[in-house]
Length: 165
Picture 1 (cartoon, one colour):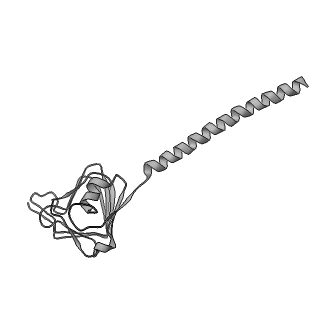
Picture 2 (cartoon, rainbow, N blue to C red; picture 1 turned 90 degrees about the horizontal axis):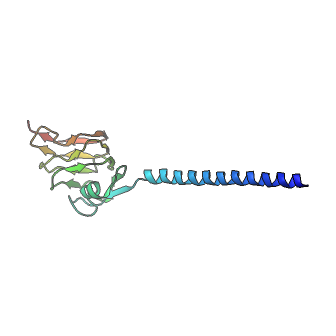
Picture 3 (cartoon, rainbow, N blue to C red; picture 1 turned 90 degrees about the vertical axis):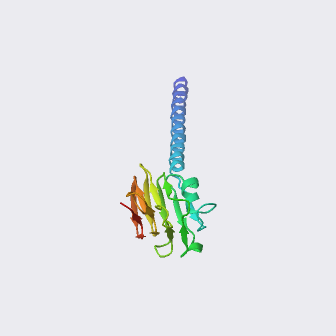
């Protein structure tokens, strides 16, 4: 009888260690998955204004609101209206996606005053379905876009963007 009790006590002790190890591993896995999801969570922002600055504008969303990995989209309410930049180029200093509704509907105009975008080194930028027009630069460095990062354009039109030599 003593030997059976000793064996059962030993068995329970082993099970307790096994159970504790399993719970520790499970908690670690759950925390790891949560951190992975949290770290890669992306936000989608919507441009709702054709003004150059202020709430809901392209400039404000790119410079102040969006984080690396976020996507900026355009409300259909402003389809066909040009976003005219009056405060100079928009500097993109983080990796983002800018997704227009199509090149006929989403129009960003440099106002023949400055280039439209300046993309910083170390960033990955994707621009899709947007028209970029009337960019201008007095140096030879990009009338529409000055790119120091990695840029991909899909279904975009770039027109009347000039740089003087």
